[in-house]
Image (tube, rainbow, N blue to C red; front, side):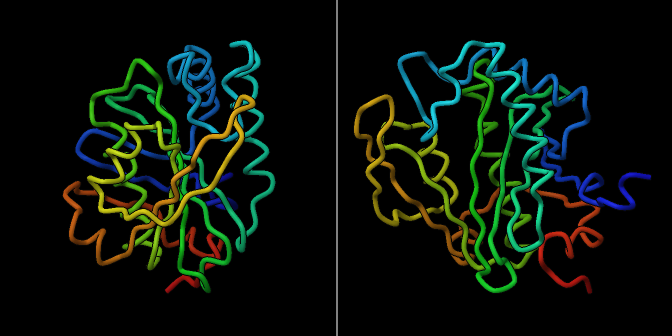
Length: 216
């Protein structure tokens, strides 16, 4: 079976409401359609690369292409795990966790997007809590980083709930204008103090070599 050669296909993260895993072809199609419907208000742009400014059909194709490209470029020393997020069996968004030389740096980075019609339900907090549990418990990371434009109030609210601290500001150019991008950092101690979401991890041990770690 394919998962015998790429065990990340069997990795599952579960919270009280959500399941996070690599998408099936049908779920990848649903993700593409969800992104094409809209992720944010037209006047907003939460991404450094404004990929959602394209026509809907192109946005959908880009979601599929990016997912395949990310898996095709996978290396244990540099990887990005783009997990489909399901709520009651319905695809609602994508949660990303990535790392470079994880065995040495003990640091991960996260990013995400959520279909606009699923905003305001606490899903963003729960899905990021899931990958932070994977990072700190499953992968024994010491720190996690993230970033959000100063205007992205929803993302900053999630970060505050989970214990992140400000780690500096980058000056980015988006849609021809300068936008401050706030860097955020979460230590294991701060995460442990703020964690409230129970998370279950399934199928991790066979994945560890693909994530640059040694299996027990």
